[in-house]
Amino acid sequence: MCFTQSFWALLVSGIENGSIYALVALGYTLVYGVLHLINFAHSEVFMSGAFGGLFVVDAVVGGPPSSGLSSAGLIALGTIAGAFFGAVAAFVLERVAYRPLRRRNAPPLAFLISAIGASFFLYNLAGKEFGTNPISVPQIYDEHPWFHLFGAPVLNTYVIIVVVALTMLVALDRVITRTRLGRGIRAVAQDAETASLLGVDIDRVIVTTFVLGGLLGGAGGFLYGMAINVSFNMGFIPGLKAFTAAVLGGIGNVRGAVVGGFLLGIVESLGVSCVSSSWQNTIAFSVLVVVLMFRPTGILGERLGRAA
Image (cartoon, rainbow, N blue to C red; front, top):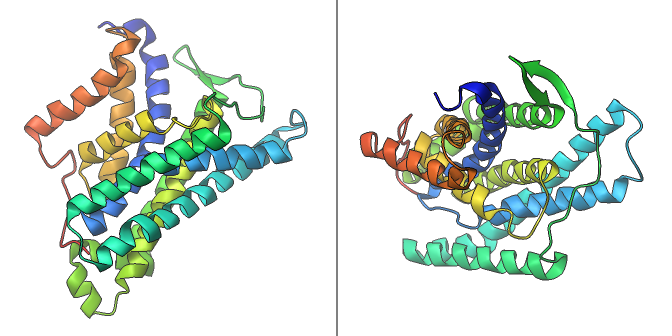
């Protein structure tokens, strides 16, 4: 096969990318599960988390970390800050771009236009306030291989991103499946009208899903920025691929979004060994088309009820 010589290196890179896609995809799928609407401003939530984490870490870092413990603390601080700013951005989006329209029973097209308008506003605001040049996250640790997988070096950056992402993904799954909050989210996603009659606060559930998606997307933004850089337009391609991952796994299906994210990351990474790297985005979206041709509801199937 065309990727025989570099299979393991490409697999490691694909898992790293897939973990980011999965984090962001959950934001899309959570909101769609309860509202049957796509939050097209979620890519800017991702970007907001990246800038938030960057500025917090930049304010704390006075020089290269003196120990592994201080590096771990800075990574945790940046991730938490990114999650916080992502959650704030998502909360504001729900209050400004979605809730007023829901209370007026606006048609779905109005939500779409509102989300796109909010996306362009945040995109241009970030470019105006922070500049259009990419910004590097301050040095938190020395990047080097931690171990080798069948001869392929696995950088500490890859390990950090995947471990943090998996921890957050497992935590969300536990929240959705084991807690009262999760039962409320699942009830609204299955039948919002009946859930309301049974005493579930629909508005609270909706804003919670936005905030949860913002937490994951913002944390993913900081991790992505830590590995590459932070910029005002950084959310467009990852956001589009994360939406692809959500549809690929089964829109509205939390575990499907995770499966779709990792699958998309791995397939596009392995695919570039057979063609030019300039085809990476084409490969990603071709995977979606092929899967949906044979399974329109996604790999694990849609989980949709009556919208809130």
